[in-house]
Length: 175
Image (cartoon, rainbow, N blue to C red):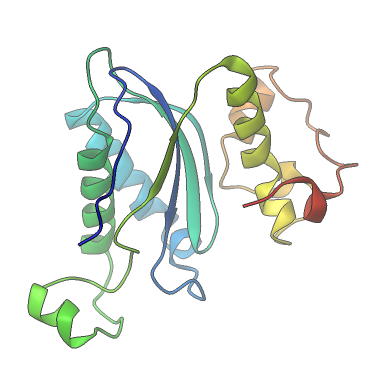
């Protein structure tokens, strides 16, 4: 079995990518209210701060800051993924292993995380979130994607509404 090593920094600020198992599905935007509710319920029981969030049809990115002394982002993601799955009808095909384990065929099992070390790195990830829907061809301008904390950041004066319009998205940001 692989040895997944995670860096744990109490109260740290983290970048995450979480993917659907079937990347051709659009479940996250089709059921964005269920995702919001799963996240809100988890936050009430296991507090954390959402610094940035972008939801695309088949994956999402988030930046969270955990409470001081807390390192348990894995439980939070498990609860969000479980609550979201429970809100959906059971229509996805299951492998024999998934069926035997009582699993759903919605999420990839793991997620990718990265500890954000400073403000410069935070800014690069926040920019990545804002431009990601453009990069994937869902919209032509960041402001046109409804499932992003970009709108909150425009209201706060962090970004201008026209930010990223002149960016060559396909070559500017990797994934």
